Amino acid sequence: QVQLVESGGGSVQAGGSLRLACEVSGVTYSSACLAWFRQAAGKEREGVATFYAGGNSAHIADSVADRFTLSQESAKSTLYLQIHRLKPEDTGMYYCAAHTRMAECGSLRESDFEYWGQGTQVTVS
Image (cartoon, rainbow, N blue to C red; front, side, top):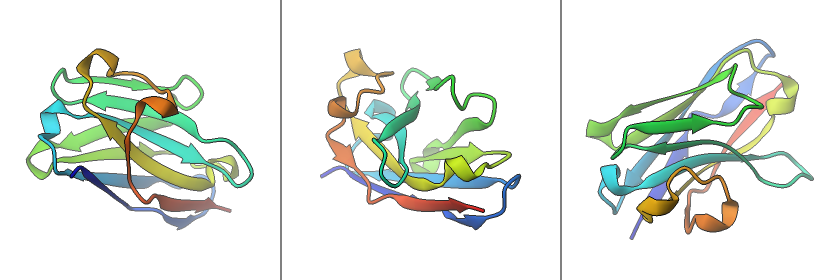
């Protein structure tokens, strides 16, 4: 059973930074296609980044590429999303998602992901 556990959210002031973590279990980390999504209150879920450890490939959505970065600790099966220069519009629930279909790694289509974490809340004031 694939499990994704997010952590690292919190309440921060605008201009600050956060590092969100997604710990992956139940699947070989290098075979998982991972992504970060976020959802603001009353809005649709938005994909912000994808990562495939097996191919060492990463993609960050253009809308946040100047402030979001990805890193990982493969030994801990953990993917990190670092958010810099936080803005109030970054407020929302951040979710880690995964699937294992290699041909679709890199997708940010919500429907492609069958495994989801519970999310971690980010609030920027």
